[in-house]
Image (cartoon, rainbow, N blue to C red; front, side, top):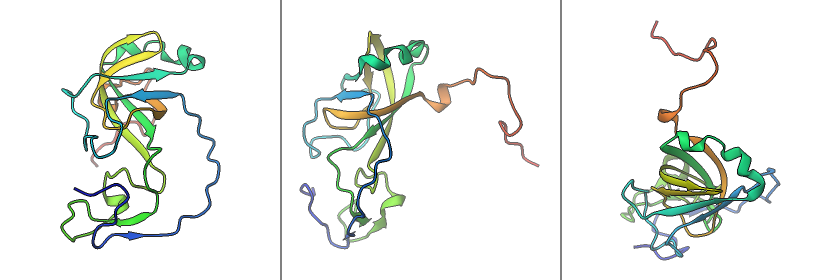
Length: 164
């Protein structure tokens, strides 16, 4: 197992450019049992522990009808991740892959996504299973999972792909 911030054989880091403000607004925080990356699972599971996504009160009206979906896609900011690796050795076997060909949390812009399974909603708190992030992870956005979502508007040209 790799230690925190350790470079594995074959990995490559770069000097990161200065940060610029992308204008992200965190809409809440995720509460999980994991305090350290070394205890956090690599992928969330439907039978994983019950976690909480607590949305800031200012966004409570945006949760209207969220209970219509049993699966949601959560986008979150991996606030404790490295941002400088361009080559990574995920299996620690000496082979390397480019960061963009992996689902590693180590990325230039550490945005994580998980499809979660909704157990219940209480006020501004969503009780879910399927997360794979640390406690206090900031939430960027919530959307119905693509496979669960049926658009409300009538179809427009380009909505459906056809085989010609």
